[in-house]
Length: 109
Image 1 (cartoon, rainbow, N blue to C red):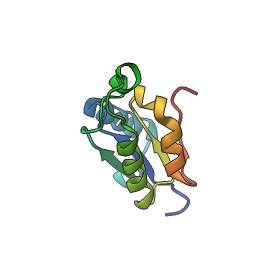
Image 2: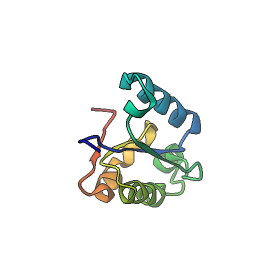
Image 3: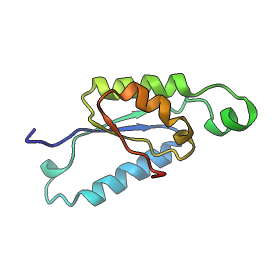
């Protein structure tokens, strides 16, 4: 697609955060036509265990869900991955391990 990278959104951990991120991505693209927007795939699985509970209270581990979603996005051809959930970044190493050559945006950096 003429060097355009497909963006993958690992979301659903706060469905509203995922929707807000996508809205902001669209607004920041500066496209004049629909066809000028970036190709985007969104994995939104709200069943992902609570990240805060996992970190603070020994709750269920969200890493298997994050890994599964990451693999789905990579298999869909995504080369750049974003994860709108702040707390999920505590598990960024898992996402990066599953992402292969895809670039994973670290919102904390």
